Amino acid sequence: MTEVRGEAAADGRLDVAVAALVPELSRSQATRLVKDGRVRVDGVVVTRAAHTLFAGAVLQLDLPPPAPAEAVAQDLPLRTVYEDEDLVVVDKEAGMVVHPGAGHADGTLVNALLHHVGDLSGVGGVQRPGIVHRLDRGTSGLLVVAKHDRAHQALAAQFADKTAGRVYLAVCVGVPADAHGTIDTHLARHPKDRLRFASTDGDGGRQAITDWWRLGAARGLSLLRCELRTGRTHQIRVHLREQGWPLACDTLYARRDRPTPAWVRGLVGEDRPLLHAWRLRFRHPTRDEPLEFCAPVPDDLAAVLARLELDVPGCDA
Image 1 (cartoon, rainbow, N blue to C red):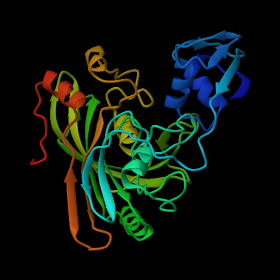
Image 2 (image 1 turned 180 degrees about the vertical axis):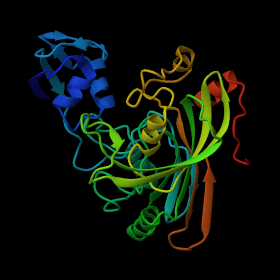
Image 3 (image 1 turned 90 degrees about the vertical axis):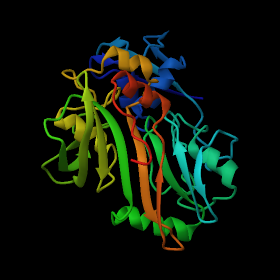
């Protein structure tokens, strides 16, 4: 156990201050530390992430032991969509972290893969064996994993040169005026909040392009189909927020002028932006044949669409 002490630099939420005090923690990891009773404010344990702090408050954090140098195999639920001797395509559930890190030493997709696949040593790195691309913790849907270096290199090249295709379904707060559009910006770390990304006109940003289609709208919410031409961190989350249509239930990129309705939050789990990696296509890394997969809409997203009386997109759409 490691103790970290510091002072809140400004007024604000407790989980934001914890994440700022320990830069390697994500906002969700900081929230988990608070809820686990590992954070004290002026000597008193506080377990409410939204607790309001004032500048100068003394924080004490009891950090759990770091993740092991190598991830360990764990018998965890794993939805396998496709598997052969070269790769595995999985349908990740919302809430599962992809690979071990600060605050998530185990219980991740990598831990489950090591149990399911066996030896992935050296494929893509010690902490991220086999992982070619990633999904945020709260995002559900499709992910391809390589079983050996040759497959990893071939798949990574497709994501790098933008020949792999990824299509997402998103429920956002707000209704686009147009039925279709393209968002083309450059993304970089937010200048004031290191946990977030933002579009920038300055140097250092990387081009991010999202094509979107409005599939339906009701009660001030919209269902969008989003196709990535690039794969930047938080790309869809940033792009939709900056257009004025933030993802429903996305606390990191929420907008005060577009709050998620309470009834939606009641249907969706905590830390669950309504984003689903719906379709995935790429060429097989060793046979060079086209492959395409679809992950059915998960129950929580389907429940929201049902309340909106919008059609749930099927894999035959």
